[in-house]
Image (tube, rainbow, N blue to C red):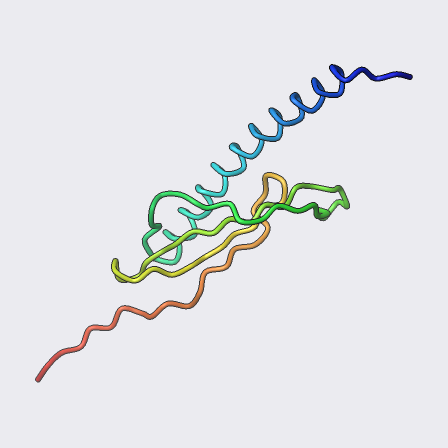
Length: 111
């Protein structure tokens, strides 16, 4: 079976377009997961976005191979301090969320 160069290029373009659209969708899911986590932990989700940092293949709980995407984002507990967080999406599902410990709000009174 001879595949022409045009056929190979067409397949690559179609795959590239699908991958790009799927990545945009997963990024939106990651932003929502980051916002929800920040709200749950009582911190502010900064910059209203996540930054893509890593892509690899991994197996889900059913043994299927999925794209595993890692994103970083920042939160603040005081409004002036930035805390680095990350989340991992396995396919379209949140697989792991890392938010570092942050200091609790403490009210100090002066006597």
